[in-house]
Image 1 (cartoon, rainbow, N blue to C red):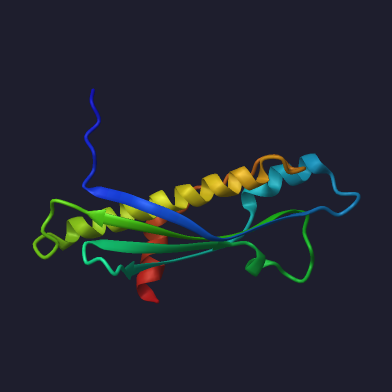
Image 2 (spheres, helix red, strand yellow):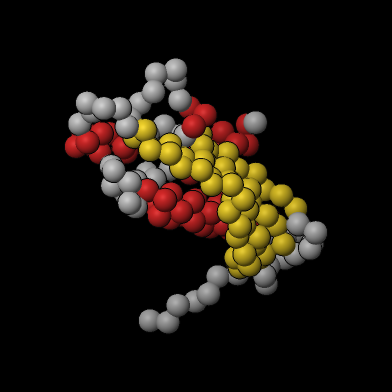
Length: 150
């Protein structure tokens, strides 16, 4: 079956800030830490911005585990990544179909940006002592609901 291309277009994305650290306390057991990596707490923030081009919009996304650290230093990885993605939606009348526009933005464009961040974090941790860290799945409806409340 041939793929049908979406009306949503990703024109470009940029990693504006990227930071990665390995924290290892002597005496820690690597196998135990590997098992706890999926529980890593991190902040995720995003915003939808207008572009200079009326037909495009920008998604700003930041994932930051450094900001969630308590005073006690834990072994594992810490990361910070800040990205921007430039998108457009073609062949729909935005004024006529705002719901479709929101579907494209929140349930296609935003997950694309999260996926790009996930890939970048995995790549940074690839040769780390605890092995590759894969960002867990994110509850998108909950994230969007909390963002709308802010």
